[in-house]
Image (cartoon, rainbow, N blue to C red):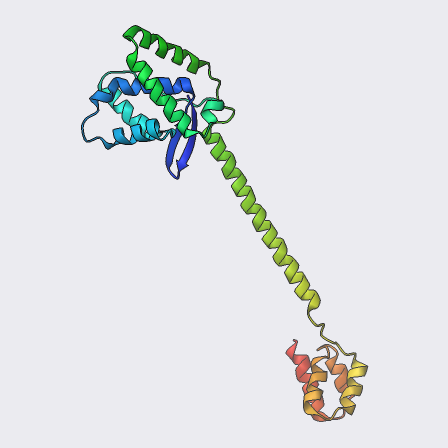
Length: 232
């Protein structure tokens, strides 16, 4: 009976077909006069359903059933079905007008005619096919899509970060490594201590002892040996 939807977070309702609305209206009017004073849900239901043309909230159906149970009457059982043009229509003014007209027509019928009309509506409701997808199935599919979308975004982020890291590595200046022969020659000619230090730093630690053998300056040889020891 109807299509379930979430009107707002945590607040569920049903969109009904016309035959389903006749059943609900008849069931409500049967116990309307027995609703205790001070029950504000009665005003809320009539305002939203008959005046505003909204779907019927699950909570309102529960309230109606509480009174029907107390009166020993059958409860309203709502089942999910396929909805057609009327059930899908967003035109609330059309629905509110029709609901008020149905209510007036039912109240004007004799007991027998009213019963026949309700039975016809029930028979029509029973012929409605099950939904192509229940509300719970729809929610599960939406959650799956949301999860997949989140994973996709995470994968895109990972790929972007990896690409940025690769670009940064490609753009990073490559450290110059001098050959022992070139380093020895440059150290022979260099007189600036900072320049000599830069030459040694651009020499591999493994090649430092070989260069030290070719250098007569004892301070430079010590610096080359320290450079070699620093990589050990």
